[in-house]
Length: 363
Image (cartoon, rainbow, N blue to C red; front, side, top):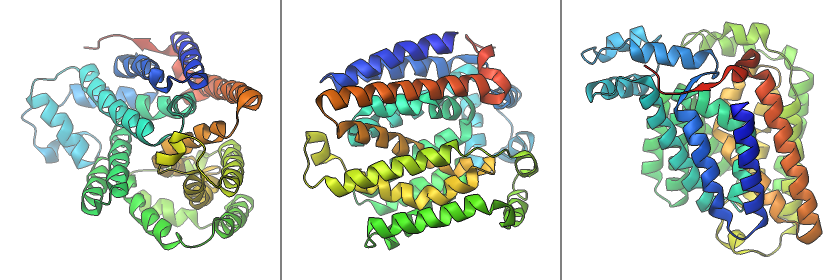
């Protein structure tokens, strides 16, 4: 009930600030969830227990090699971060995970404030599912995601070497971050192709994947992945869930329509925002085949995690195209949809682990 109550309070704050002119009032909602993420003790899935166990049982005089062996072969930068925390006197896993949550929230807040047309609505959409998954469970990948967001900000500023350095650093926290490099290359190669062509081609490929997933040679992919870590359970028990894929297609259609109809900026946010509707639609179109594969094999959602915040920004973009009565109706529908997403995630996440959520200072 603690999570449901906090979500209800934050939803009210976010909707009110989205409807008013003080958009950045949504930051108190972020602070509430920063506390919930930082001081969680249970109800975050089995990963939280594992991260806590490993951190508690490391010693400050351990070598990096021995610590990596003890921590199930986790990425070197995350293991080095744990050792560094131990050596400066941080022995409490709650404090350590709290520092990670603080770093992640600082990056997310800066990214949304700088680039989102409506940070409050974008955060509400992100909070509805992705925040809990990323900040409660994915300790290593959450750092990698934040580093990738920093890399994107540097890339936008034209500082390519710094962006490359942060992608490399992100990959040392979670190997999956390396996928950002080929994606950036693909985006650059297709920048002159019309959005309509990318949209149609991606949709056809994605539907083909969704209909013929059983014929895809994904066993070879999992074979290579298993050399790094055992992913056999994902391919053996992956259930089909096309909700994310359907939602992505709908968002892509809406962004495509907005991009085609928006001839000139109509708000100050549109004038300064790098992430225009057309830009967001291109990103989503290139990622759509991954949504189709992830609908059948859960493990591929790990690659989608790097796109979640930009995906959530689309919600604010879609909302901002409406005005007056249509704005109110769209805001109400979007808020209800976000609430339904959160309740569904709350009830189904990790066999109901969120319902056992407790908060405090761990030992």
